[in-house]
Image 1: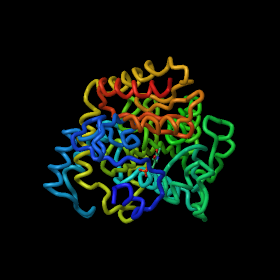
Image 2 (image 1 turned 90 degrees about the horizontal axis):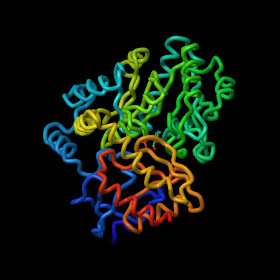
Image 3 (image 1 turned 45 degrees about the vertical axis):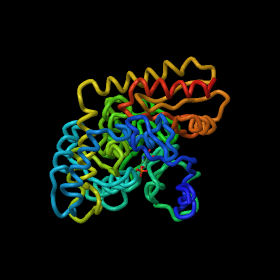
Length: 389
Ligand SMILES: Cc1ncc(COP(=O)(O)O)c(C=O)c1O
């Protein structure tokens, strides 16, 4: 039986998978090899997860060395990769401490629990509402799905988790109207990723932070997709001159192994106490050894300038095409609005001729590895241009 047939028979069909089985041995960075030995250029990086591409040798070496040293210890003990990674990430971001989980959803769950406990400890029981934005995406567990501001996703799994109120992105009046005395946090993506690569306006972000500061409401930035250098800064909040009380990271920070992080500023650093939260695999040393290699690479001088340059290069090459109406996003997180073609058709046609792309709502989405070289960029862009012309 083929790989695809085995999946179809034995694995839950909760994804709309495309007909491609990857192997990658012999592939590198933005180049990946399929089971039938075809080479593909990758403009998707596993939805922003393989931030250093396939088989980055520093990341591979760090992971392999750690796997041979200590593959796991329970969170009753300590280990060096965890200590070194946490110190470095706090140094880069200015946050006080962090909780380790395994996914973006779990990072957000941790932020939500932290916000509610912060408020409970200070103000008592009924101040628990979390405002999130319409068109947001925060994950797939029942709590993260309840936080997600997409009514069409609030189906089947009733009852959803109480205490989430959704506000229209960039609508200050709506935000003000819904910020009542029950609110303990406002949660948002600076650039809505799954929602279509839509950037929040500076004035709206300013208003969130102003309103929250006035009322001791916490800000939660979901940087699961935008974080770890994807937008040309380590955190997308830096584009806005903002640092949220809590910031969540996942995807690119792990470089391809499961890692979710909830970063806490001084105000929230002591909220979660022994026994209030946990995860068996959270902070796994193999994962964190790889993540430390990601941090080392993206924090090297000049790295983000390169990310920005590559993003601009893609824009320059595509912007003039008649089919391209506009390109949203920052750095190497790009959403392309097409004139006549459907993004999903372009994604499928690209796949047939050797290029991996993504969609986000009606847009074609590109999230190439941050380390992609210009040769691969040119190769992928040539394929894309032929399809778009
Ligand atoms: C902004 C954002 N938050 C949360 C998530 C959920 O992350 P995960 O799939 O790792 O649970 C995603 C995934 O696409 C995301 O883009």
